[in-house]
Amino acid sequence: MVDLRIQVINSYDGSSAFTTLVGGYRLICTNGLVIGKTFAHTYTKHTKDFDLSAILERINSAIDIYCNNARVWHRWTDRTISDNQAEAVIAYLPGLSERLNTTLLDYYQNEKRELGPTLWALFNALTYWSSHEKVKRSSSANRASIVLNRENRVRTVLNAEPFLKLAA
Picture (tube, rainbow, N blue to C red):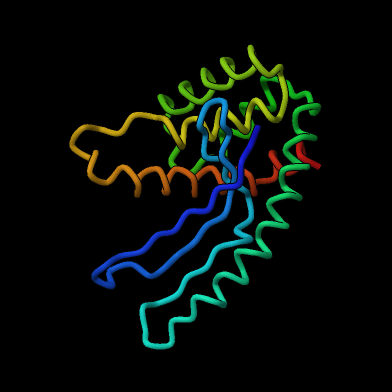
């Protein structure tokens, strides 16, 4: 089961703009499911003209788009892929090291055991990494920012040709 997830990023001191992102949240494993295209991203500077009602309108329309994406995710559960195809998709992750490549392939093999050799299993391996991969103790104060960066890296993969071909 996947629930709607709305992230709100804000700062008290104006160092960050008011930002919202809409995606999914897989309840079984608590993965934050990113969506390849940013369809519900709002970015508003802190000014006297800050209009929360306009942001709420965009979020409401994003809920419809989320529902469409949920149908796409369901189709991915039936899309069988090979290990070579999974490797080709993972290769598009920005900043991919050999160690991270091995980690992601291991995550895919774990997901594949439960979900089968599907695009859904690969997607869940990528989002598992973005949501659950450990953060160095020295960086723990920046965990939210690190997870957001990982999600953006996964989003890049979802928009890359190898993934788009499999998802078509």
